[in-house]
Image (cartoon, rainbow, N blue to C red):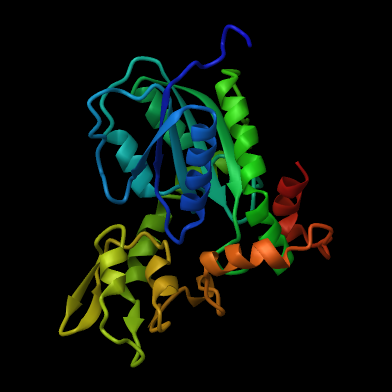
Length: 293
């Protein structure tokens, strides 16, 4: 052990998750921290827009999917609402379907800046990779490998965080620009959400309205109506048991076969070929590199 080793008894894990990828990472972090004798206080940002704990965290770790070259807007707002701290260590974990590649290398920069303004000392950042839920996916066996490698990646990250050693990345200059203009997706998300409509397969169950993280969906005359506060997380579309929801624009962003992380996780335990070699392609090079680390 060295002088910088973090000796903490509790850690706060604050996260937002749309279709479940980030939540799965957080769940594994909680399990691994408990095995290390450290209590993990988990906060679902979509259910709690401010920090309500009486005491400041000993160690704060922020988790978020990557949306338009930066972390989710709901996460940025949550950090803005944090009470002022005094040099509390913090880490930022991003989750994407493509890995630590351009244009996502600067995705954590805005959140890190917000944490610093709030008095936190950011000591660690890391990109985790989960099966993509947006536009296209890597080969299926690669997705299964991503799910099976979660415990190993989480254990490595926890070891690095608790070591106290500063581990921050150097984003590419152009990617910083992409992270800056990423706010434009907030406008695109509003348009996307406003055009979502229910087909005749809708059973009026109201599940989409209950699960929307921004309360953007209301039930009117038995059918879901979508407002202008969508964040493009795709949760309503993929979680609909009857696949009754579809957007009127940006249809390319929705996977034709849907997205069921629970189903993939079950299959990963029995159908994953650890020796499988991808057929190649630059599009998924970041994912392949992540698996090789």
